[in-house]
Length: 252
Image 1 (cartoon, rainbow, N blue to C red):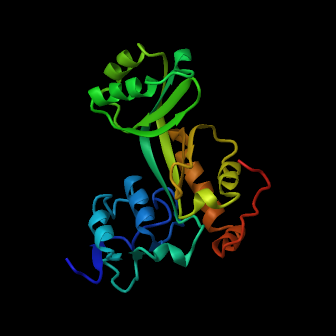
Image 2 (cartoon, one colour; image 1 turned 45 degrees about the vertical axis):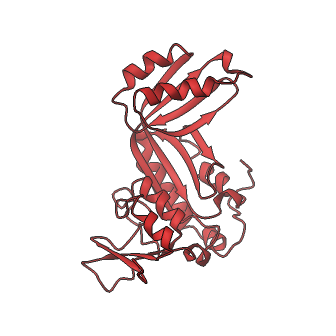
Image 3 (spheres, helix red, strand yellow; image 1 turned 60 degrees about the vertical axis):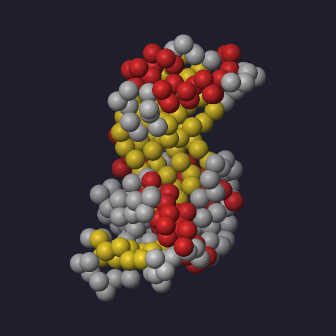
């Protein structure tokens, strides 16, 4: 369709800065880029399905998410130039629960080719999607949203190396255009939750998100702290105007 704008009418005021069930002070994000919206949708922002945004991207059509119960609210505008309104800022904090972390350690992985192919063929055989992945010289850590085939997967993985499983984990994703190129963001995130153990970190694969995994029991605490740090503290108003975040001198 050659539409000027796509409007999605739902029962909330648009995409929120966090899950309101965890953060009472969560508020509407006024503008998102297509990439930011897709990332948040994947991580559970239910007002927008990841596949919904693709036709709009293909045609460069803005998408507005509105509240049918409060039509006077402007909602969230998703578009190609939306991120330019606030570059290099955290737009929202998303999360997923009931995540399983699987770590495979094998000394023969060092300097060898073909190991990762053999590893991911296991998940392919069992039709299981792998979400977050990190690697070292001799180990691979990854997360699964669906652990229904875990027993069979573990049986095959043990032929490749030593396997460690961490159930009941939660994935947190800090989303915003230019995060990878903004000094201080990662330091501020991990200083904010410095007493909460982080078992897996993914940064750099995408320029718009910082993803990490923690114990699900501390999810509410972590998201609440991060929301306060990035949306309530005065230092973040400086960041929103393009200043380097000065919350910490630590570099991560």
